[in-house]
Image (cartoon, rainbow, N blue to C red):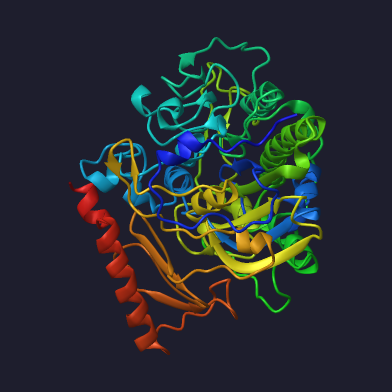
Length: 527
């Protein structure tokens, strides 16, 4: 079976700036690391977070691991991927917005040379580095995964929104194996299945390897368009005729019963983008039931493939010594997409020819109990379910309410691998990591975080400092202040009651923004 041998040569190439791991392990043994990320999935879209969607395999990780209920992403796909991979805020890595080059270093649209990826750090430490799925942190070939530390890659270098082949409405998108475009079987290809299957294949290739492995599975599901196999959709058809309000209330109650949210936490009110179920016609209600059924099917199919990954780890005898982390890149999306690219314009919702989304009305359900959506930095945009499974160290399931952020995964992986985050890499000076290791959480201890957490995307701004959060839905909007201990749903703006606190946090945010290269959205779009 797979031995754990620390590569002395690899370690010498890194100039250390952090302390090696204190995680209990036998000398020379280090865990495998698997990070699995969903795309556009809301806070309560998993069974273990309160959903009615069937996710037994992800739930199994939670039932035998730990859940962090206050874990954060950056609110959007490209920025989250950049922060996760590098341990930096997205602006520091060069992806302050998306993958388009906006002519400013912090917004160049691909990972810069002042950052390292988890794959680069762990490869130097003797790990095999594997990836499947959506890259989306540099579309040009010179920025692809194999150029940023991965040994193997199967997936889409560009963005998401692709399930069946050919990729309707996605001109120029393709799948590559390592660095070569591959031919796809249009009759049988479904990206979610393919990504999970190749993850299993890459794990099988490690059967006789002397190295531990790092596997990063970056799913497209359940990002729009709504596309899923008919059999998976049928499983949920009709289950959502109860309507937005009732399903939302059911999730809220289940999340409380499961301990995901406190019993005294109020649920935010639906905003103006959310329809009232009883105001819809029977035909409209049927359409909305179908849309949510397809969305649920997309999550379900993803979970089935994750089950195959878990089973392969078991078969290899590696599950006990593998750290598996699961999260989402942002909250559910309010984006309204409703068009069909088929010649006859009669494609059924969910088919390979349809092009539609499930709208803010269902996203408001996915994000229970929080406000707003993907791209915003209120809780509905940045709160993610986070699950960490590590049987060797986590013997009893538990819930942890400490703050975590995707910038922490770099430090966590380096800590687990008993290696160091570099000051230099390939003769380039590397920016210090912004995150902290989550290994203390694994051990049941407190995280050593001395700085607030910060967000900015398209002018949406936020800072979380302990139990206080300051947020603004746009660069020209007033700051809002919330007590996150009492009101994580962000229903009571306390800015007028505590103006000095708001001013203090606003100044901290501005100092951070200046340091990492944030440019106002108005200036950026007029650049």
